[in-house]
Length: 338
Image (cartoon, one colour):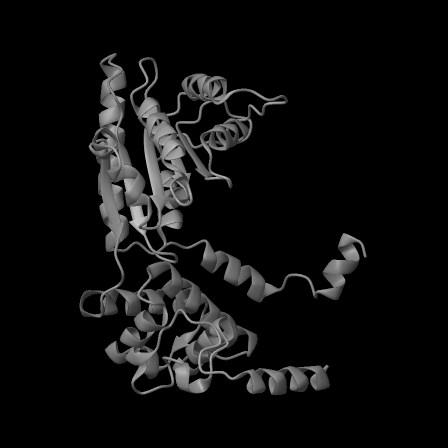
């Protein structure tokens, strides 16, 4: 099947697909993001001031810590685009003041260095030692005038690493920020295990400012979340049912997303898609209940939008409340429908 046949078979893109893509590109600022923005502004202004005065003092970094689904990765990458005078790495452009990359697996010093070179457009065609690889990384960062290097999924730098490899990575990060010719600020975004790497070395820890992507709090975040729901619904040209406008619903939504901002947005987008696919004119609580069921495969009594004592539900569990017998029955029903 060629690409054209596949497009026909899958129905191709429709207006709903395009609307959803537009919604996914939106970004709603929140208190964790504002803290990150403040820390990054201080960091980039300090780096530019050092350059203006001709100094090459050691650079500093930011550690963005949060659980899976907290939205930290999206926040960092969005952050770069908000600074108009910051040149982000782009194909065809030599200058790259901000570079973002994910930590490869395995996350050895050598493989991380090779990944850096690939991102910077300098792939190696033959084997080199870690020392040579990182010399090339430093040289390319200088040539591209890179001020900030972002490592995403940075917890992999320390998970399942032996003491020798961890120390080598610590030394590598310090060398990036303390390079005598071109120091580079480092942003590490990752899960809470990342703090083990940073706290392993006092010299490394003092160079980083922590930004904690805390879980949403029902007391202070319910109203901002409801405002976000309203904004996305309006952008999708959906009216708001009264059952998704009140604080009790906002608290249910926060719990259903395990208190994570990024998961809250994902769940909201899933609910909007359900409403749009069904040709509904409004967004209601039923859309969210079905969105949660679709994402988790849970039984009805384990759905935070349906159960009265929803706080007793672990929203991160898949297939919660289901028995193997129920899965067999549902599987048979699906096959009969086909």
